[in-house]
Image (tube, rainbow, N blue to C red; front, top):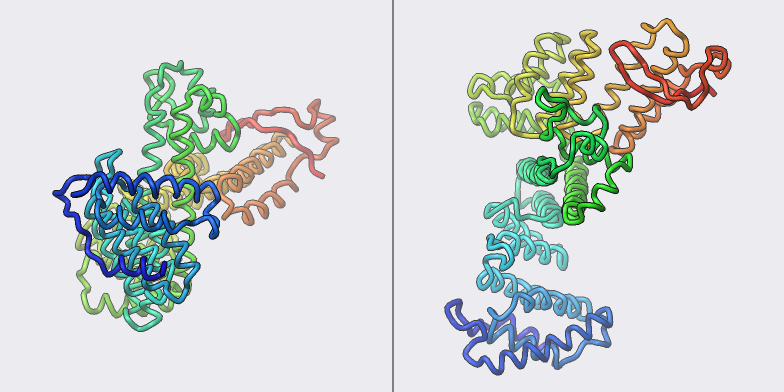
Length: 517
């Protein structure tokens, strides 16, 4: 009987149009049913949605509201998802009928609530994204349907897509290719498209976090520095000693890692809440990005990518969008030694000179060990609006100066890379290596050992903010600790282990003196 009640909904057509009253043609019946199902739902929710706590009275009342006054509340749809979830799990043989009901629910929600009542912004893409996610979650055999729904959602507004929707879309795309319903190029195209969506999401969240601290909020210069970090993280300006615009998300992340902003956030409650939310969302998006990379890996061998892209470039050698996709993906997957990458980079620069094209030529010259020429192009590439590419440009520019022996300049550029992507640990590993490379320039044995202490500090910082570099950081730490001064050397030079010591020269760092074990 229950199955018939729910299944009948999927075959029904809503009795209410958008222009009709909020509570339908029979407002008394609508309000009554809203109350009945609403109270019963709360009781079910309080029972943690236990199977034996669901009631037929609740489902019937909810069904009447859904069919006869679908504009009365968005809760009809969010609660309806939970009800359908229960029946899908309880009646797996009938799940496709319930999935159809979910699809109708999502379509009606987009029809009757196209904008978010709280913000007034469109939410259709988000609703359709959720529709695609639910289809794929409940029945992966319906991957083609999920793929098409999610593809349309991305086309509507990619910024509305949550991480789970992006993940489902890419998995459905892979299913399409694996079942010969799409070419392998579809995976590559969707990967690039979704990578850009996630990068844009992260950039927007970073910007939102930056806005929270772009105004000093009445704090003095000293209070700003105390709250947000040391001069390593706060750039100086000629006007007042602190460039508040440089108090970026990078500074905030460093502050959190070192436990320096807790009191500030406590004293600015709403700012703290918004910041915490942005932090969580950035972490989620970074996870989505990593998952995309992992899912893409089976399709991302250099041999496969070059084979697919070579054929596509032969068909349309002047397609700027294709050339950008080739150079971007081959760079991300470290396939830049290929002739295809170099050909695409040169052709892209001829057709559309840009920071992105300059970046690709920088790669070409770097591979040829022409570091000065590479530095020129990487510097031009830092003018891009794409944060991921900007980070890579600064990182590679630091490598150029490192190879040219300009260690101080390399460190300055590595710091800029860290500001662009505060979740990346590699810039700090670069700085650590720069410090260690200059240790021999210090004749004093204790100070020379302190250089290695400063290098190890950077390694610890790198892995504390970016677990992906932990193995490399640990290897460097193991190497650099061998350069620490001996305990007797520290003692006979009137120092003590654990003492704060300033490393002079171009390094200009303060570190904690440690001895070789």
